[in-house]
Image 1: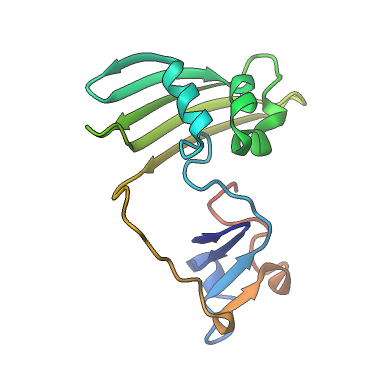
Image 2 (image 1 turned 90 degrees about the horizontal axis):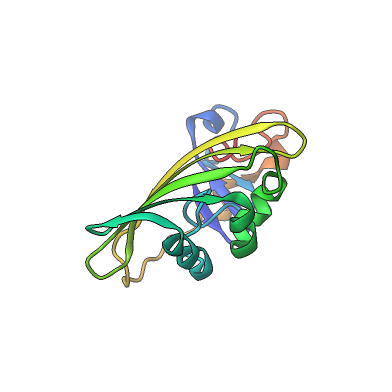
Length: 168
């Protein structure tokens, strides 16, 4: 998957069987998927600051903690856009996390696990892990060529409605 702004391009075995010859990618428009971790977007300064402030242990560059969903909604725009309905529920939705920091204090790895209770009664269990490396280096990821891409709407009923593997 390649993400660009609010669009995501997917090339997977799940989509390959329905794509015409020479087309390798399906574009999912307006997806707003997180830049890194689906639960804890440590690339948002306010989110990282809050996670560091809510730690329960911090030893040798490993930070562990637990945070309530309503607190994350207050500080994290990406969390709020995806999980606002899980933030004011009974029982309270919580997320446990581990951050591994480099000797320079940069995030190298984020793992998060949460049981999110929706106010309408549904429960969502999410486990996510993200690795970060090569901080400070410029990276260029080229988008697929227009001739290699079809929009999800053009393949309606043949490919998943949502980005495969992201939320379904």
